[in-house]
Image (cartoon, rainbow over all chains, first blue to last red):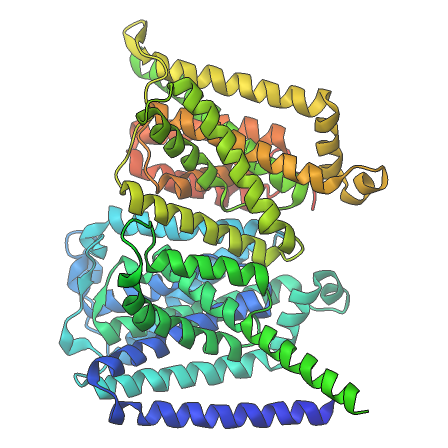
Length: 343
Length: 285
């Protein structure tokens, strides 16, 4: 058993090194448009990983992750363009423009604080309240953005200006995105594999049992939610500085489904799985689906979102542990049959 | 002044009655099968769209209404038997899959019919005057139908054998199995009933207000607020809470503007969760 675990780790290291090497070389061999897309993908992966912390590792269904992404995004964007507060919250309009790292960090902090507030109210209750409340948040968030559109830009959103992007050069921006992804991955990896992460999983697997051995269930649920929201906010803020525009696609329900789909396909609570799923889904959405769509007959009421939702339903029903898990199971079964035949 | 008061009393009752149908359906399937059905709003809006299409193609509107409600019930049974029954034990997946179904259907409705609001063909016309306040017969019809259906639901659950089996399964799953109730069949019946309630609610709603595919999600928010206020799983609680919420929404509409209705719903939910998490008639988990 121990040897097996060691071998898995080696495999992961090899895969990781290949992944890293490919990511580093990518800008040298790919056209600029693809490099831009891959950079966006890394930031999207941060959203998927952070969602996995609360849902996959701690077992609390958060359906409003995009709200935290949106909060981070708006915090960063408004810190860059404080003049949008003029006429409504005037004392904020005079805010000096923040350096980019500060504005990204602030996005994470604001999202984390909001996560804490929602968590304190809903996570002390058992059962379905958390899912219900987080499901409503995106709709209320969207309403707020539209109602206070002179600040938030409503449906059109607004631009923070190219000079406030991570870097003028696409390749450099790509490397910043990659760096931020690796940093987030490392921190989340460290958290979920620490004693804290162990408690998250204990809460997920059996709340009563966790409580009986002295784990403060509510505290760890809230902690997990704050970590998850914080990184969601970081991801959202980074995306703003990557693509300089903010709009409803950053907090709308389709993005939520994209995040869920990625994590579910990869397998909840595995961190590697959601990263793998995120890559597959993001590329599929941005490339393959777009090329495939024209081949669908006009009269069918199908677009790319419909296909993604259908995939999610299919995966959820057929492989609730994720495709990655199914593949592993399949390989294990095959090797077990082989070893039993050989003995 | 009296004018506004009359209007609020009547409108609130109508809205409350409609949401009571939707929320009691949501509560029913949750109470019985512990399925948190995020696709519930789809039954609400789909019934309206099917009814509209049928009446446009020449079917009598009353007949179209009955057919569309039954079709939606059948659709719900198909979703349950084909998909949800396999993953019932996997709570997280039930939520995710029903949400995906909801968005899938909503997206297809948007592609077919567009995002703009539609109205259901008039089942009744005319205006009643209470003092100086005009009240359309449509609203009165919506209220009367809602009350009749809710009364029938109560009768069905408390007086018929199947209804009692539904209650038994909701109170104790294993106990119901032990006394020989075919719980799977009960789940299917409950799913049908739950969708039919939402479907009737949807048709009454689009009869009075314009509705668009986006109303599926909106109706879900109000259903959440109602079941949390009434207590998860309690049908009686849902019905009473629906009227409370109906009046709050109507007041918010009247004095603040329509865009504040969702805020009001969220504030109510937060307030209940802070002060009385089990709701008015909640059952302990």
